[in-house]
Length: 165
Image 1 (cartoon, rainbow, N blue to C red):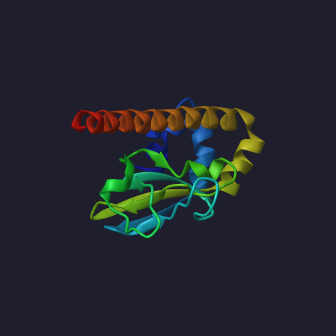
Image 2: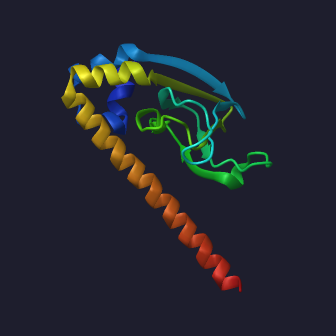
């Protein structure tokens, strides 16, 4: 599968035509990660965390997004979401204050990630507002879905705790 074909399958680019996606393809760079590699570190909400410079697309493998707790090693228990191909992650790169709030860890033997530099992507949005409008609209839906899943999981866990009492 070509990089352009992969980008066509990514939900954040849904609604873009081939010529619009072709504008995004040249700003992609590929990186590989291996089991337990840290892709980026998050911090407390609106503080700490790595500078969010890239929107990432998982091409191969699996990545866990975790809420790391101070003074505790990261593990599956703090996983908020698992990213599978061809999903995007690292949306903090397009939302102020541009700091990752969750940490991303490779949880498969090998993962391939396409990284899109925030500055390059924003430049495309400024040049072609339609692309920016569609991508940010799709991104809003992805964020809303992730928060809904988190809320749903929290409600399930709270219900289980209440049943034990």
